[in-house]
Length: 165
Image (cartoon, rainbow, N blue to C red; front, side):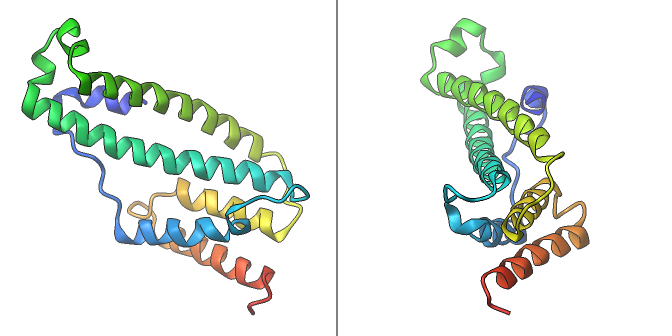
């Protein structure tokens, strides 16, 4: 997560998720097999579920990291401290823990994305799961139309597969 390290001299604030992004994520996640994966479900659904869980944890940790770093900058002059001084501050240790966890999640997330690519979907649930991942990969602020189409497709396909339409 190089962006965390490069932000040292910049105004560091946690990225604000738009209401639309939060609603889209909230509406898409439960539709991917209802939050649990049955043993007989297409394995690609389980891969997508794991990626979505990683994405949610990354976003939560990034917000915590940004808030904590902002506090350390304003209250502790964080970037003027030596590495030894930083290590002595409990909040600094938490920042390092978050950073390490984010690095692990990034590696796992990339491996899961790589595993998703070559496998064709074997069910509507797998298509919904793949589209839910795609909706998280496309930033709504950058591509609102594409993001909207994908999240709508997730909802529509989930409704078709559950017999709602």
